[in-house]
Length: 415
Image 1 (cartoon, helix red, strand yellow):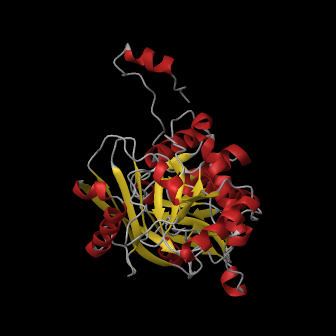
Image 2 (image 1 turned 90 degrees about the horizontal axis):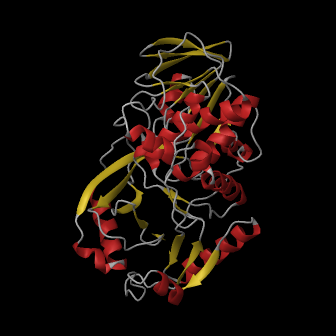
Image 3 (image 1 turned 45 degrees about the vertical axis):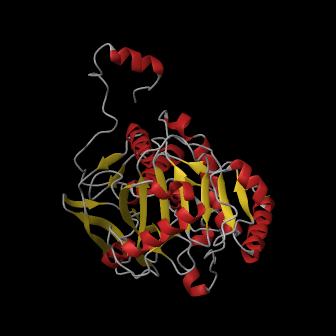
């Protein structure tokens, strides 16, 4: 793998950048692999990378039906944080955040990870009680978190209308280590590193069927032919239920559109991430100057990547209430991703009743921040055929045993 540095940049400038090596190969699929990962987004690529790096497996294929990172990895709002309420969620997201903090150096690829902090606003007494509870739980788990008052917020984010009559700001939780990262860079960096460790990344290769025999996975049917493998790990955000159906399984998830938008570029004016559960909206500013704004999911189930106008209308109205300064800013583009949501708003990272078949899904609106922790624990599950302690609570059996992890609304905004 070619080393990226200021020296390689200067050296290639002399040849007008004509001699850079390809970031990753585009091989034809082999007849058989030790592990097939279905889904070439951040979670799938992280799984492949950690399988190769931590478990010394190299005969791995990542199958992506379109271009690499073209699904939800490229359709999210890039927030990274770990301040979840319940121990199971908090520890998993905290492991992910720790991996985020060293990823650029580890991959030799700039992830543009910016630790600018995350504010979760409280607008009423109920909000503040929930914030105090969550901050206390975070601190008991060794996660950086504190409660700040309205005066502190006003000094830190002076453009925020803390005296808003509709959404008065009484305080907030504050996680200094939270922030944002560049979603495309995550996919590209992981793909480059996984390829260097021998992983085959096969694009435009849609899985159309999962073959099984005597309770065991034996391979997958694809648009590029049949590929054998006794281990198939499915990581396809938004379409997990469709892949499960190919294997004769029914997952307890529902798919919803999740919308977001960005504004025209502005000079730097918002230096942190601001989230509000009461209005279910959040906002940050990208390195390009765009305001990145998100809302809650559309209520209906479906696979639309456009979403409903009324959700965006209500979201923008709330953001303008909190930030009157943005009332004249123009929207640049809007999009939606398809998210899979479990009844307890927590993911499934688990073996299945079918031997050799593993599913990583149901991340809902919190998938991007968990990319690395998800891949790290899922790789352990696939390699060892047993869960890591961090993802053991997120097994598929919890929906029959009743051992749910009710994270709905417990962590401020679900994103």
